[in-house]
Length: 67
Image (tube, rainbow, N blue to C red; front, side, top):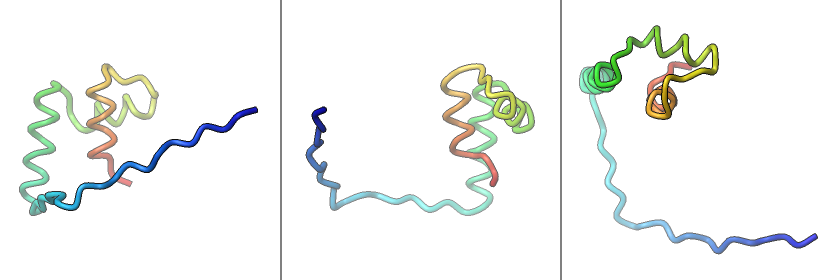
């Protein structure tokens, strides 16, 4: 059996980080939910059932879910 080794990818040194206030985060989250036409609870139900309406729904859930 052969093992494949992937070369390490260099990380950019000038990564831009954008910090949001709690209000800005909530506004961005609501805008994203509205764009998909779902509520947070509807998206949580999709996650619980592991049946997302689309890949975009799943990606949004991964970003906004509360632990």
